Image (cartoon, rainbow, N blue to C red):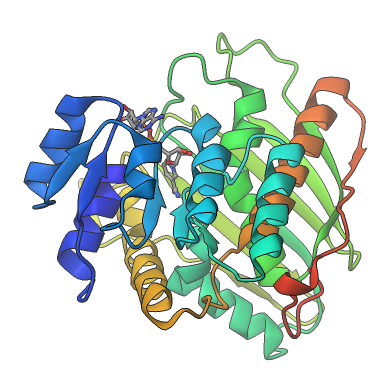
Length: 328
Ligand SMILES: NC(=O)c1ccc[n+]([C@@H]2O[C@H](COP(=O)([O-])OP(=O)(O)OC[C@H]3O[C@@H](n4cnc5c(N)ncnc54)[C@H](O)[C@@H]3O)[C@@H](O)[C@H]2O)c1
């Protein structure tokens, strides 16, 4: 993911310079810096964040490092784009919220890039323009070809599903009140079974989420929003279809990159523009959104483990994160 961000920042965002590539592996840092013409490399993230010639920080290291490195960036009052999830626990996410509120300035952008995906943007505007009446249900599917070794159903909830939690909140402009989570009882010979979640929003809508990291056939994200007067669905984005031997066939990508390439590009451009202007991007996920996704993930993990519905309990939203027209 870090290499993809390096590619976008260096090649696709005028006005931004990819200055330092930091990776715990020096070889990786050198490889990425050479590929995308960065001036310097490092293996020490805290030292990199402190550098005077670094204006802004993009974090794409593993999940457990996110909160610490985001806090270090805030300590230096530097804008930071942190890959999802913002934190591993609700308490860690709260520390980020508190640190940013103490600065009195929004500097954190969380990498929930689906908010910039043109099809989700169209879905949100169709709903808010009243084209399907009032939204009552939303159905989401997130499928990968094969889960990495040791990836569990619990990680499907805490690592994969946060994208779904965030886009549900963003499209519906509401928050999550409760979550239930289930795995099939059937033995599938895998530690990572599909997980199905049922989410109740604070506005009373019902949302389903399937995360299947061992779907076998391709990377596939689907979503349908059902209203009182119609429904709006994402269209699968195949570039071509082959008709041959009495059949029609299309091609799936092996991972998420082709499907969300434009979303990453638009997100990173908006982030760099906000670094220049000093104004947060309204469309982007901020630290409050990152906190909410973490709390929902924690409740989802508890629901999956216990078999019981879990309430999602949030602190009061600090004034720094107020948004107009948003119940979330
Ligand atoms: N937004 C998205 O769609 C999306 C997609 C994939 C991954 N991600 C997120 O991006 C992050 C990275 O995922 P990935 O698949 O690229 O992982 P990866 O394991 O392929 O790469 C992580 C890199 O971080 C380096 N690293 C480890 N600890 C470090 C540290 N303390 N400081 C500096 N470098 C360190 C590793 O050497 C490695 O090169 C994860 O948090 C993941 O959740 C987001």
